[in-house]
Length: 249
Figure 1 (cartoon, helix red, strand yellow):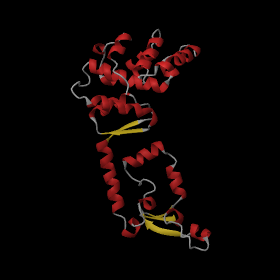
Figure 2: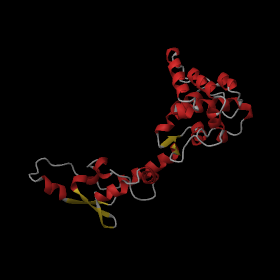
Figure 3: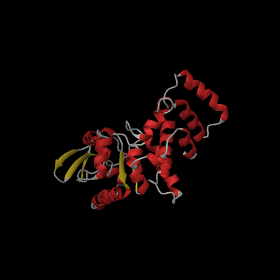
Figure 4: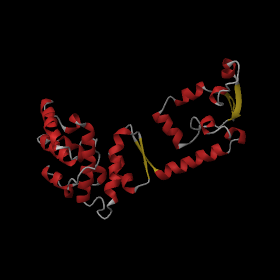
């Protein structure tokens, strides 16, 4: 886990006491925001690189080659040279500066562990948590293509989805969720909205697997509902056979 930023932030000429609210400090990838400015600051690029190597505890034997490659690239800002390292350092910088400015409590050692989950942000579309620190800090680092969702909101929505599927006939439920819930349900559901945003072609894919017969019922190609019966002598016939199921789709 990256080391504390207190001595590093001092070497970079910044102080948490001069910072505004966490929501303004944190936007690691927002133009003009404090943390982004610090890791990109002209005149401090070499110091920032060395601070990063120290904070990430990069083995001494590797540092010479890293610095040489950085110089050969023209001495770029850290986000251009090592984007993920810059993200990790931005998260740690925000956390430690916020501690120094009393924007985050120093009385909870678990805060350091909680903030480390933000290291995963570049690799996800949706960040879900019920943690109060996450609720404050995560939105500060999100890009326009990412979302933060509270754990309570997701649990409530999943309960609605579960209630809908649980109301299906017993014979449909017996087929298993991979048969009747391959896609989210239509209607006012958070999970459906998330599929629409992040997997926008899912409705088109689902539509190719079914067509509406009349309201409340759906006719579905059997290959999308039932497992293939290997005893069927004519597999092609099995693929085109249809079955009528409750309109949970």
